[in-house]
Length: 633
Ligand code: PRX
Image 1: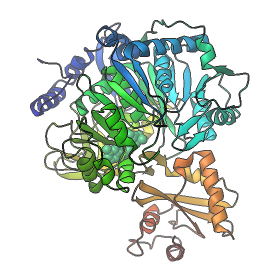
Image 2 (image 1 turned 90 degrees about the vertical axis):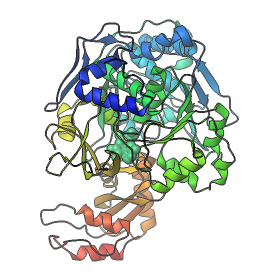
Image 3 (image 1 turned 30 degrees about the horizontal axis):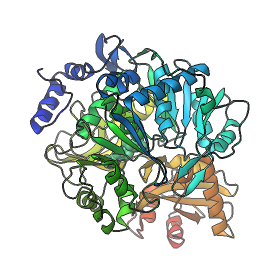
Image 4 (image 1 turned 90 degrees about the horizontal axis):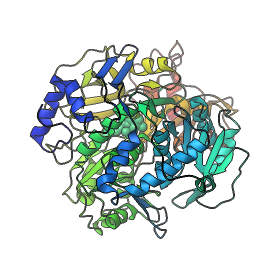
């Protein structure tokens, strides 16, 4: 191989990389991995089987990912900005950190962790607003070899406690308060509630941010106090390629959210590789991903990908519609953003206020604009391209998952053909296939089927924390020899993929992934509720809305009151993101004789169908369909 496949800038380089990756996958990944700083080189590129599963990359390689995110840039980029933090309040001060300053902040934070007894392998839960300290905290964990588990600061105390308990986290890093649009939440008080439900936490490290008075106890340390006595030097702890870097909880079709585990070496290689190529990163670019670090998008394309590439990254604390719906466009202009990466939900919400608003902004710094998290409908794609990209920017529609660690299928900005609403082709090195429901690979190019991956890639999920069998069952057991994504997809003649959506009981609300079982379990905690069934229905802004059918002991006399109570329960068990949009009280659910709920019928009713429910003769009580239709809201 002549040139390393580090950066692909033309269609022919893309083709060559794809071919190289298929013919000589190990050489392909090795040529990319060689561009990083390793303390000790690996002695084997990959070892894998999808049976157990057991996947390892860059075996016996030694590194610290933060040396690659920070230290190696200090020679040439010490004074270049690494982070530009745009606060919730437009009038508040923007905070900026060069790579040299980031180095100092992360070292100091790492020293605070060690001072508080955090060692290699310990789990640290991060429950923070979108402030620079969230990124420092992640990097500080990585620097000391601890495993971070970031929990989105919109999850309730119970959801936080479940995650802390599952990971047996020794420390929680939080702040007094959080600002999001016109709302303030006292995070440390939510942590106080969570602490009553979990036992492993030895220290709560609290960052003073909003200045509110919050509940503290004997576990507390204030971050600013701790900083007083620590040095700005810290020698990064050596980790193995396969040591866990982080755990990130995500919803599945059954049970509680599971902790997806990513490891240091492979994740590093893929986060950087995918970032550079999809966004066509060039020196001096200013990259802005609007996600929260509580989701995988924030991990890979706020913290790790951009910093590995030595980019300047905008971190935004706020929301798209605060103080008004021009905020995104203002921020793009203010910081001369070159790549902008957001979710279709945000685009759809902003479309509602009309194209006049983005038209007021030139946004001529933009080169590539991206979409992530859910299928993007044609109208939103077009609006995004016309009014944000001004018809000049390629739109990259990036398909991937918490489990994949990085973008898997996406056109590369400006390279080759783009078809609206098609994510595009796989990144070189990724081998997707479409399967029939029997698990047979579909050979025809133009086809529709279940999306699976047949060869490992460096940032793939290694295990689900504390329960390897669950990882096997969820992703590797349904279709022998493949990683199964849970998504359905269509492929055209040219090999472009269009993601159709989940084929399991996972729903995607505003780009947030939720398990229907998880929401049902929460609803069922209401005293009056006997059983519930949650399905999705198309929602103009959120992509999918949550429709809950609820059976009660007795139909509630005051339905509105019962709805409010259910909302409250769901919010306190999971968080606001899981609140049902519609709740219908019913006397029965369509069940087969074996007791299985026929969700297909419930989905159709939620979508607005009044007939064509297919064969309902297998239902225990076919009359139930009629009565649900009558009460439809
Ligand atoms: O259904 C797919 C959808 O989001 C799921 C993964 O969710 P999560 O792990 O939370 O990660 C979201 C951010 C990467 C996928 O199984 N999804 C993600 N990106 C796209 C998408 N659906 C369609 N098009 C996309 N670009």
